[in-house]
Amino acid sequence: MKRMNASEQRPLDGITVVSLEHAIAAPFCTRQLADLGARVIKVERPGSGDFARGYDERVRGLASHFVWTNRSKESLTLDLKRAEAMAVLERLLGEADVLVQNLAPGAAARMGLSFEALHERFPRLIVCDISGYGEGGPYEQKKAYDLLIQSEGGFLSVTGGPGEDQMAKAGCSIADIASGMYAYTGVLSALMLREKTGQGSRVDVSMLESLVEWMGYPLYYAFDGAPPPPRAGAAHATIYPYGPFPTGDGGTVMLGLQNEREWHLFCEKVLLRPELAGDERFSANFKRSANREALRALIVETFAGLSAEQVIERLEAAQIASAHVNDMAGVWAHPQLQARDCWREVDSPSGPLPALLPPGRNNAFAPRMDPVPALGQHTESLLAELGFAEGDIRQLREAGAV
Image 1 (cartoon, rainbow, N blue to C red):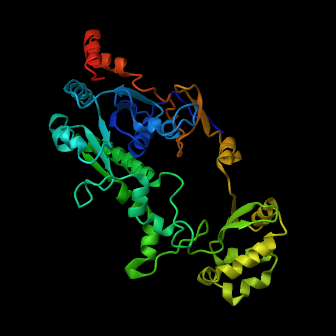
Image 2 (cartoon, rainbow, N blue to C red):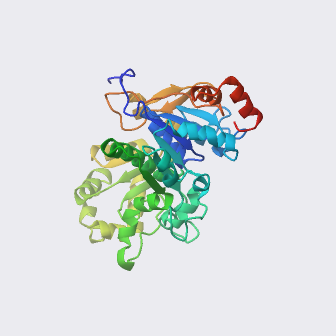
Image 3 (spheres, rainbow, N blue to C red):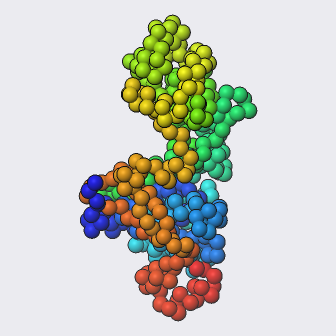
């Protein structure tokens, strides 16, 4: 496989992003901007920093969330409750292209950092505000965390087991990830727009709206008062067979059928029961879904005499989609990720760590894969770059502003 040339120019080289960020949504957005070459200056509270730094110590003493979303950034500590720190931020924004923030609702505006206030002073500055519910409406000031948005956005109503007490959250922060992705693409589109107009603009990203966009299928399935998709555990709610099935060696195989041609092949080459293809109970997807318990029993009966690998061999021979049910160790060692050379090494305060290349590779440039910063690691160098003399920096430290 052709290696990417790290010497080539990246799309966002020369773009400076200032981020007042914590947790996941904004850091995930800005890390991806850094992947494309942007200089990301992460403003953190002196002494404690982004509270995601303290979520756990699973990565050689560092927090797993923080390592994932904060490589390739510079950490600047500022106590924005102090006028001296706000003066530093003002000077920093004068050099910036983008401001990203996901502070508590209304906090940025109270500090004079609304788009309207900043646009007067910095007309080319792009401002990206990420919040739980967006500006306006009765939920504007409501606190929002990922699981709460999964609940408000209807995700929990379609995820988990069939019982009323069996709802389940996603195993990762999907509402944060969704809003981080829309913030990322929103900033990119605002940069493109600025090339045409010469003016900065505001990107207003709501976690709720981001997740509800991803809920489009169940929303339309339940359109006009129709019953919503039932919770079906790890199986698909409305397509069958599509989900996990146990095998005789104690393993589990995930498989999925999408059309009638595959159903006939599945009966003939996997179950070795071609007569089932014409069984009236299973002759269309909606019938298979309605009679899934009876069909599941037939599939489990066949798979009971086979190992997981034998089942996968039959599925592959029939060109039926299948997958292993990997745990995290299995993903770290995944042969496809190894074969495609997906892992790189980045530095951190705890030493070198593996990091996944950003998806969506471009053959013209290598993504930026720089260290995860220690808290305040770049404070003095950034202040010096902004024109602060040693004595000024000392005074800022003594005042507790940095």
